[in-house]
Amino acid sequence: MQATKCWSILLASSLFLVSCGAPPQTDFPNALTNQNGEVIFFDDVGAILSNSDLSDDQKRQALRDLGLEDERLIDALLEA
Image 1 (cartoon, rainbow, N blue to C red):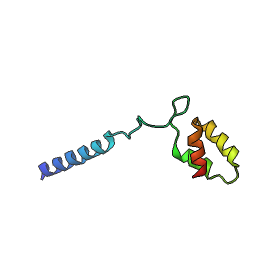
Image 2: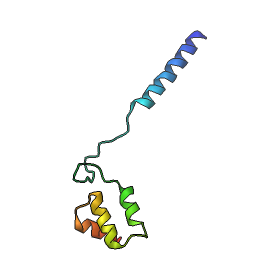
Image 3: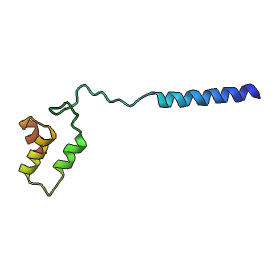
Image 4: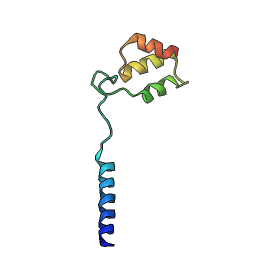
């Protein structure tokens, strides 16, 4: 009985450590970044593109302010 209890505790502890030990991936080698090296998130781009209160010129400027520099990419995003 005592051995079973010890094995149960050991198994539970091991599972806990394994589940907590793997940090989330934060290194994205092909990520789109701004001039400061900060990652540009699609959620931020999507929020700009879906904002119906902004004109296309305002959206274009907001995308530039976010850090997008490629005008062809900005055009493609606005046309999509």
